[in-house]
Length: 193
Ligand code: ADP
Image 1 (cartoon, rainbow, N blue to C red):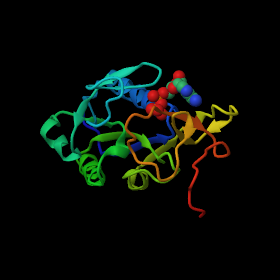
Image 2: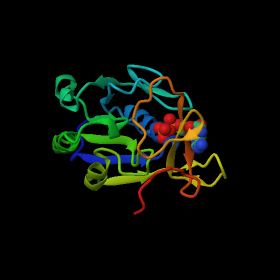
Image 3: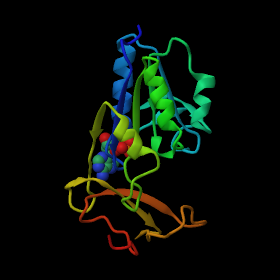
Image 4: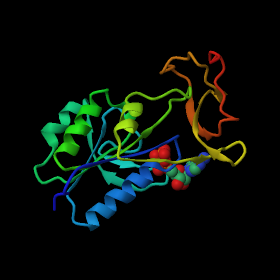
């Protein structure tokens, strides 16, 4: 059943805030409503499974990895009424036009993505996606330092806060992320605003 008009929903927030869980919850409900659902994610995210979106708590939903968001047109089925996009911060800026085109076709587009990178700066196409959305839900995680709501993703390299200008990939280093509140988010070397 087609929607009368398309709609764009964005689920955002830091790592561990439950974006993927919420995306999967909405997708499962769409399936119950007999919608035709397809999910896509950037191919570069190798977290947990290649052909699924997977939450940190273990739930998963089948997804098609795309090298480039433009490839979506090769995969999109004529009867699809709901499109999910996970890890949307890793798509190129072209994703904003693709989302617009999907919504113009009457499709409900549900997008999950990080609003900020580890530096606390806007992440890729997310600002534009947030602006064009009909509905935005900004989720919070729990700060691992104090238990308050966390809005930031802390990057740690060999157990220490990553510096502002550390390279994206550091060969041989062990790297991890945790959820932190504004007060406990540390980015050594960050330029003063
Ligand atoms: P996101 O997609 O935003 O990274 P997920 O949906 O993958 O989040 O995972 C959310 C789950 O992560 C939570 O339901 C919880 O089980 C787990 N989790 C682990 N660490 C934290 C934390 N610091 N704050 C909140 N949830 C956490």
